[in-house]
Amino acid sequence: ATFLSGRTTRRFISSREDRAAILNAILAAVHSVVDTIRPERIHRETQDDDLPDRALRKHLLIEGVIRMSGYSVVEEGLTGGAHVWVLERTGAVPVALMPLES
Image (cartoon, rainbow, N blue to C red):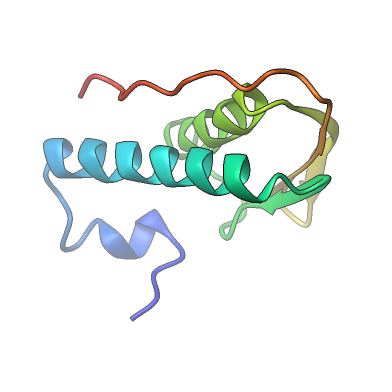
């Protein structure tokens, strides 16, 4: 099964601790993939439109991890309610990622 929205996963991943552990795993995976592949440009877009601040925070954490890998945001905005980010590699030295406290 594929899950693209926290709105659908909340039904069966309701524990705050489980959701924090999953977010940490996602952040670590993003860090690993970006540091391994090192694409010139990364395009990100939210699946859902009009996200509440709590959900948008998770996307901003992912953006922060990508920035820590030596990227900067070159475009940011809304497209039909979805948040969009375009990041480009700047050549900055990547930094290590530590797990978030739950």
